[in-house]
Length: 597
Ligand code: GCB
Image (tube, rainbow, N blue to C red):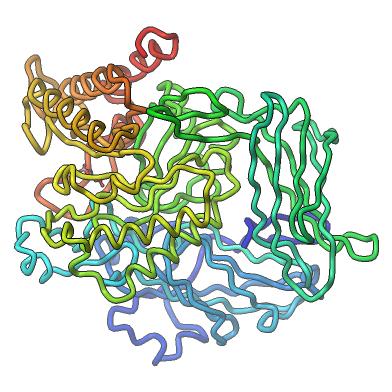
């Protein structure tokens, strides 16, 4: 479904922030009929995780189910239309009832779930919305889960975290993005896809595909306005009832330096009158890998940026609009041009902002540290389904230039991964992504434990590597760290002959901790490690970028390696700059002016 908008044909109504809340530790809510409402004195704010918000009632590390309920008045303006309830995201799954009747289930976290509630809701009346959210994971889910006993079975006792997780970020639970009720006409434009390309240096081509929902026979037309609302002349070729090609002479292309957006309005026409309309902002641009280069509109581009997280004090993973503004301001301040949505798709609000700000994005599926040996029967199908939904949601963002289909598979170093299991798995997953989108490069960041034989390299357009030499390996030894990095980058490039992107590198630093000599955890050590990596990566002829791990400190599951937070941020969790932030600003600023690469 498309991001909800209001216009002549559609309404959007935000559901307010405070919901009644109860935990369901023994998973008995359905049996007790909480589906039709429940008693509780506790309230929770949406969007927001329950962990820090409700720490006082013991939920900081809670993994399990919890129920939300809210009475919502549906205005008369929704009468005669199709009515939808959208949960922007609920991690990691949800089930929704309206007035006691099941509206549907959302099987994935990090993505929106749209439930049609036309037959359950009555305009002009109140309705009860009840949501069961669970942050439990399994062998089949994406992300893949892990239990305390799995750590023992995998002989990784010292890696056990609490709560157990295969990944190094808090498994926050809750409704993390806005809940809205919206309407569409009976026949409406759905899943609009826009493909853009450049032609002869100044002409832009915009191909628009629409899925038309409903029974009416309608025709699609399109209008293009510039960013001042003035109609833009274009010639049009009709490809089919649901697809058009617009040719725009003297087109202003979208780029990180000039993130110019046109307004494209798609209308569905019946008997000469519009029955639906949807407007989206379109950036005309083209991304390509050529040789060892990443090209944006035919020009070489070098990625300088971060791996990030959706994480902040109190709200956990909940969307905080002021934080979105702040983070983009800081990314500009530090002279970066990109980030990876490690390790899951971020909110649509973030991607829309990136489109406007001209920040380039690698959008990632939450297949983190997959252990194929423990995969349930349907994990691969779930993974492919997730990718389908992620690509469908984010396809039209000019800022999204690369898909990452997962992160660090086989971090446990299982031999079985290399006997064809890993290759077969990734072949299918990459094929799925390419069938859905042939316009963007695809990658999966590899970890040092999976090594240079990792089958993801064979299928990736970009050789993405996460390396922690100088931290987890060769701790405190920066000379050796850079030597190893250099050897490995060159070996990987030589073997696969594709561009290399260092998607992660970094060091923890405790803000305020200093030393005159090389000392891990100090701000100086972090800044020095980052600078040495940047200088090396930028000295090679085949690297297309570096992404520092991490933009800001973030909460993780409990482990002796973590002092509450992962401290590899160049900003603290509350967004104060560490020494490394100033160092990067200078380095990336100089490079911008052509000093180094
Ligand atoms: C990694 C992971 C990331 C971790 C990071 C670390 O390789 O991709 O999720 O947070 O290392 O700091 O250990």
